[in-house]
Image 1 (cartoon, rainbow, N blue to C red):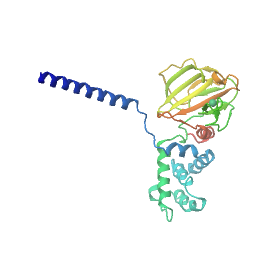
Image 2 (cartoon, rainbow, N blue to C red):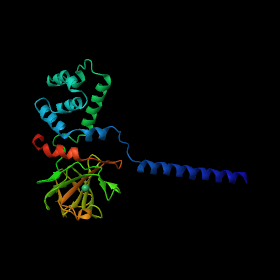
Image 3 (cartoon, rainbow, N blue to C red):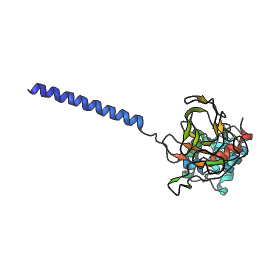
Image 4 (tube, rainbow, N blue to C red):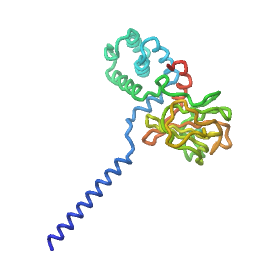
Length: 266
Ligand SMILES: [Zn+2]
């Protein structure tokens, strides 16, 4: 029965194509977004003091002058800087800057850094709020060993008195709420930028919060404690930032800037 066989083959082909399409769709839905590799190494390598001084410096010029100055200062040597910064100070638009004898690769790098600072506005004054409303101290311990080297520290610990109010650094949606083994009482906010902002070891979670709720920047989410695997340590907030591709970045330089930026916020 050649006809019947052909029909069977066709339907087999159809099933296979449907399976292929389904597989492709599943892959598209579950593939992690690609993030260009130069973005976060640059942002987290910036010295908080440099960012803050450049923002103070740019205040008297125009709103985003600090972005130009920061991209320039984080690329050129002291010797190369003066004639270029001078032009920014004279309100010459970035695209009109005369780079003189500066290496074209350096000019390219400055352009790229400027794009990064504009499109990933972690340092933009007023865009983020420092999460601890009270006295706090913290260090750069990102990547330090935990549980005898079994895992790495993927955030910053901000120490302070139990009960110190903790607020959301950005606007977003409540994604995780309640207890987990390591984090204890924890809150996870999906920021409007797509990143996951994680607040752990809380003493208490703000009772009015609900999963799925949208919240604005500076919303009270709980109070500082030492719950979860922090039971035997002093009270602290563990704060982490996970990118949409699952990578945790070092929040320390960002926190340092947000903490000292209050006076710059509009
Ligand atoms: Zn921690």
